[in-house]
Length: 157
Image 1 (cartoon, rainbow, N blue to C red):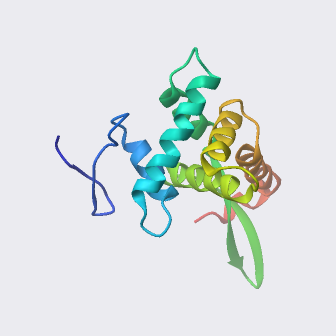
Image 2 (image 1 turned 45 degrees about the vertical axis):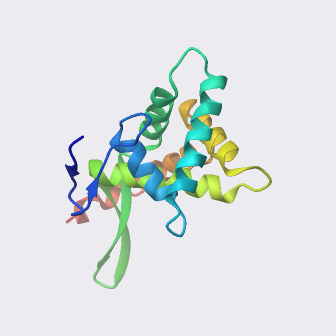
């Protein structure tokens, strides 16, 4: 299996089970204190749960759709103009869309209490697949903020 070169100058391999670079990136973000084997175990357990919940679909399809549903199209950035700070809406690059969606899903998972992490992850991914849940709410709020501030779009750089 050939290594793939990424722009972060790190060699990453597709994950063992699904052969997907997206899964590898997600597991690396899920990882805490360098414990990749624990992060892999949590992720694959969550995928098994998704496989039992959605028997008609493959877990990888559900995961990819969920991450795609959370990707924001626009965001706001602060821009200081003449002593005033404006929230200027901007389009989001593909790479940043992916990193934001992964981050928002994991923040939603970590904010929940009382369950095993793999169950929280499975819940959030199934909610994102159905276009509901905390991470989808974050995306919608970001889009609403950009819509509300589109009068300042001419300040974009």
